[in-house]
Each structure stands twice: as C-alpha cells, then as structure tokens.
Image (cartoon, rainbow, N blue to C red; front, side, top):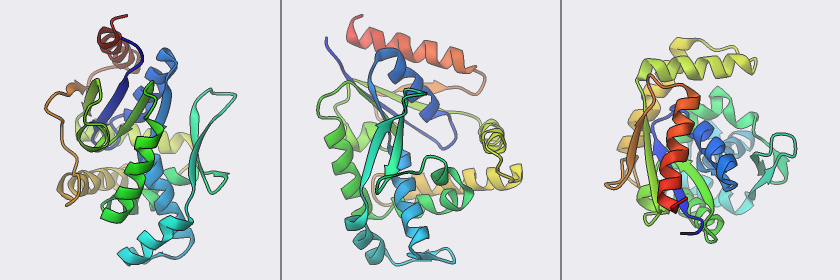
Length: 229
C-alpha cells in the first residue's frame, strides 16, 4: 500500500498535536493541525471584536470566514508545519488562554465547521497526511485508513498543559487550566454538529502513563502495519 490518511482524534491536551507532528515527521507525511485552524478563526474574531465579553453573534462569525485565509507553511528550522492567518504566523498567539476559552463555542458553529472541513478535505486529497482534531475520523476523513483516538486522565492532561504554557512564559494557574479542560471536554462532546466521539474502527491510545517516546513508537508501529511496511 502507498501513502495513507491518518486521523487522530481525542480530548483536549492529550498531546494529539505532538504525536501527529512526530508521526508525520517519521513517515515524511504532511501534518495538519485542525485545532489550530479553529483557534486561528477564534483569534481573528477576538482581534476584530466579533467576540466581546465572551459573547458573539453566529452570523457575524460565519460572515468573517470570508475574510479569513488559512495556510500551513513548513518551518525550515523545525521542519514542522505552522499555521498562518492572512499571511501572518500565529502559532504562538492561538495558544493563549483567551483563545482557548472561546475556541469550543466558535468551532461548534455549523457555518464555521462547514468551511473548515471543506478546506481540510482539500489538504487531504493526495493522502500522505496526518491530521488531528475532534472529528477527523468521524466526519472529515471517515474513510481514513488509520484512525487513532487519544485519551488520558484529566489531572494528567491539566499538568501537561500547564507545563507547556509555563514553558512559553504564560502566567496561568493550574486550576484555571483544569477548569478550561473540563469545560472544553463538555463543549466538545455535547455540541450539536459533529461532536467529539470515537470512530467505531479507531484504535485507542490512552497515554496517561506513557512517555512521549512510547506513544510515538506505538503510533509508528500501527501506521507501518497499515501501510504494509
């Protein structure tokens, strides 16, 4: 078998992006961070006052999609793809807590999801792609040859996320991080359009007690089994 499509779904702060990036690098595949796409849309809405005091108008947000251009460019130093919003690299900005606190309700808007999913499917036409998110295996690429569903203990996820933010110089309490994770889990699994759920044919990766190296070794193994290499 030639190149395949790999869909990675799971709860927030499970390390989906880290594993997806590492797997894409190992296989020489294109990596697309679907969550970054929704975060970039959220960032645009915040910057352009479409979100005010935590509130927004759905029609206004959907209308803003016509002014948003998203692309991924490979960083020559890290060899990893990074998202650009209207020509500007926003990898750091989209990870801020203000974006994290609003991304779930923005990504739940039907008009936003429709436009993002259409773009995601364009990225995956040629296969040889690793994409992570919430509904990649169930909605974006239901025919993906390999589907992985990631999960981990909530406290472990909060600790990992807090350390990541702290390493980037962001001053936030672990209590706020855990509260955000709990809220996002609820929003992601209860939204009306394409909620987070495990595809019937997805392989579960519970990384609560696994190191990054162990997770990547597991993912590479199952990917190679699917491609016959």
